[in-house]
Amino acid sequence: MHKLKFKLGILLLLITVGCQSEESNIENMLEDTPYFDLKGVINQQITQLYHRNPQVEVTARIGDSTETETMQKDSTAWAEALKLYADADLNKPVLLDQYTVKDSTLEDQNLLAKIYRAKNDNEAEIPYMKVVFKDSTSNPRYVEALFQEVNPLYSTYRSMSLHFDQLEGDLRLTAYETTGRQKMIFKDSVIYSTKGILKY
Image (cartoon, rainbow, N blue to C red; front, side, top):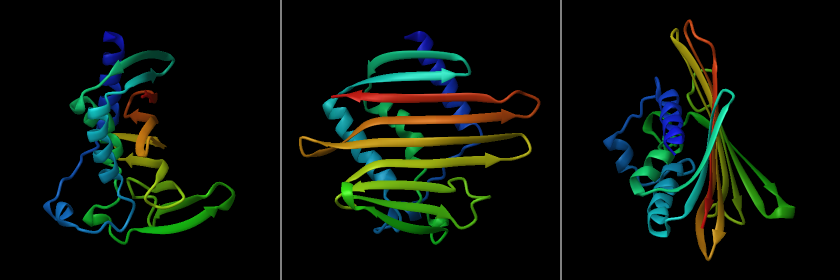
């Protein structure tokens, strides 16, 4: 358990190096969200997770080393675990009109996909996001996003995904995963990942 907590701490450090979240009163005042409300969905899930208290099997990998542990999290731990995904929300004032939106339908599965691409994908921290819905846009089932940051000191790229399902009439998070690569100046690249599978 201590080894896994250490690995998760290292992963969090790798992920957050150079990644600063900006909070804005303007953002909080927005009544409508032009893009998928990822942050709102995650906040709703954190509240639900606190009340349902599921077990989560977490696998953390850094390089060739892997650790797996099953645990239960309180609301603070869930907020910390999902903050990375909430920070990928596109509804920040500075991002308005910065994305194109493409809709596609998979009729045989009643699935609707919305694909968001940054108009300037070389400079955007979130160049791409895809959200798959079941039957309607009020029922998300899968979210994936890419994050990138490059500067003279380091470069970091990561892929993030969230999986949802309808259980007993409620939308529930069933899995989350992040896989990334970070390269710091004068150091080798580090490949890392963390995956959580929820058990209700």
